[in-house]
Amino acid sequence: AAIALGAFFDVAANRNEDCGVQALVDSEEGVAIALAGSSQNLSDLAQLGTDVLGALDVNLPISIPGNGQFQANDNSGCGLVLVTSAEDFALAGVLGAETSGNENDGTLLFSDSDNIAAALAARVVASDNGVNGLDLSVFGDDAAVGLLADVNASNNGENGIDATLTGDIAAFLTLSTDALRPLASYFGEQYLGEPYELPGASFGPVVANGNGNNGIYSLVAGEDTAISAFLDTHASQNGSFGFDVTTVATDGTAVSAFLSSDFLYDIAGEIYD
Image (tube, rainbow, N blue to C red; front, side, top):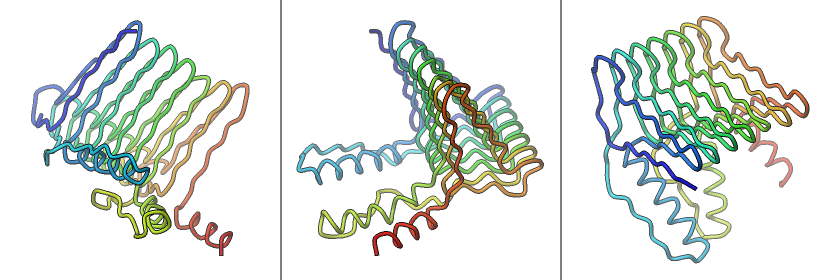
């Protein structure tokens, strides 16, 4: 199977007459992966991987030097556009980026596959754009998956977050990684002898406030299964809906949930106390 890869890290693409960064990664008979972001956030992820492996007594240090940033701001088109297409697996992902003040979308992720398609965005600030802050389109015949973690998409002209996912199985999740910090501390204390602190600074909740249309618009359509979940996600003072969410399964199960990590931890405390 053919593999097509694209990687765009520590890029400064500001004030261009069209898009800041636009990339198409295509593999007609295999896998297509497009990744963008900052080496600083990639380094934090590598440190987490090293720590997890160490806890499993696997000595495989993973080190990625760098303190760089990714910026695609104040462009006349979009800030960042990643498009992936593949037969087996397609992934468009961004880890650590600022894409604000663009006349079109801040960040646009498009992923299409005959089998599995996915789009991931973490540690992204996409605010003050003319259209959508973060636009996510995922189409996988077998499965379509979208994950947003630590995102601020506020004060955009249209939607803060605009997500469309379709497949036999379709799933969309937004969350703040801050919700995982108490859990990491607990497991560190239980299995490592001391609380474990996740690498990287605290980000806060997913925020989609003050947008001209919806804070978050999502359409999650699956044939067998459709799931959408919003954990520690805020959408306030928008021109239309805070959350405009459609989750539908034409021949199976559809589930949509709006959750607070404080509530979940309270329930867990009641169960285990």
